[in-house]
Amino acid sequence: MSIIGLLNITVSTQRPVLSQGQYGERDKHWAAHLMGIPARIQRKSATETVFADRETVQSNYSMYAQPTADIKPSDRIIRGDRTFEVNGVDDVNGAGIFLKIDLQEIV
Image (tube, rainbow, N blue to C red; front, side):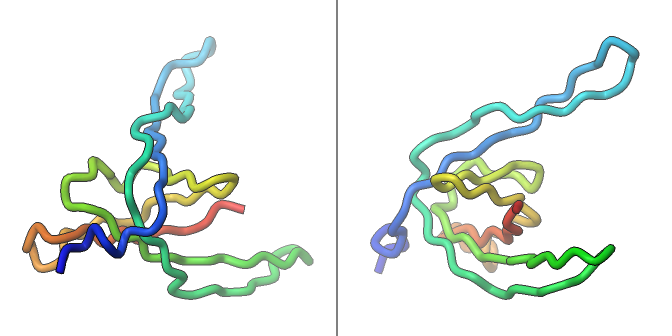
């Protein structure tokens, strides 16, 4: 069975671009990188925390993609109006069958 049949959505990626600001500081902005990447995203966990009287929920996901997808740990994944930070990219067992990508949703 091919992994392609399990990839039920498409996502886009953004890659960071570093530049120098007018005062010499490093400035990071995000540029579109790839579009229409077949993928599957599944929630792994959610953690609720309170910091400075503010409740936040940190949601972690696993994304699966073809092994040829050019995704790096510094990238962002875009799905509709949702944005995820890439925390890790793993070619599971080095088999070249699929990539497992750890994500954290940016809220």
